[in-house]
Length: 137
Image 1 (spheres, rainbow, N blue to C red):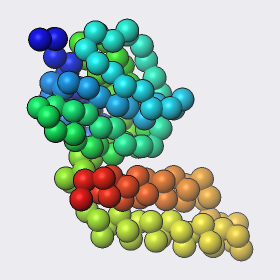
Image 2: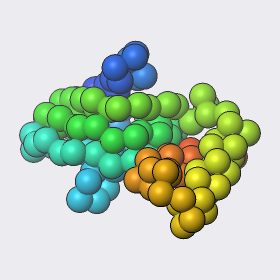
Image 3: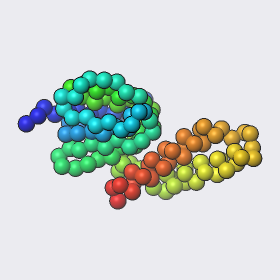
Image 4: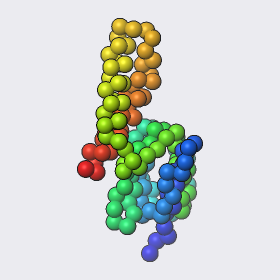
């Protein structure tokens, strides 16, 4: 049997996950990449997206909002701005966040006071959360 791959996801607030996994797929800034035990070491910036991993025959999803990944032969360390397991996502809260972001973007057409970049990032995070919920339910 192959050596396990350790996946650790850390945010400024907490350790989201620390577990041995069989495989992990990560939303890199240049595209999604997959990691198996024995992978060539590298670093990558992350985009807002969904990380998923397989462990004990199950697939688990985690929402990330950017950060960095350090891959070694036996470990994937994710240093994320924010991260949450799919089981932690509040669907109503995510839907409200999406609605607010869309409203701010609509206002941006007529008002200069709206920070479009921030509203677009909020929308992207909400869509990411809702997308993960669609995958698991």
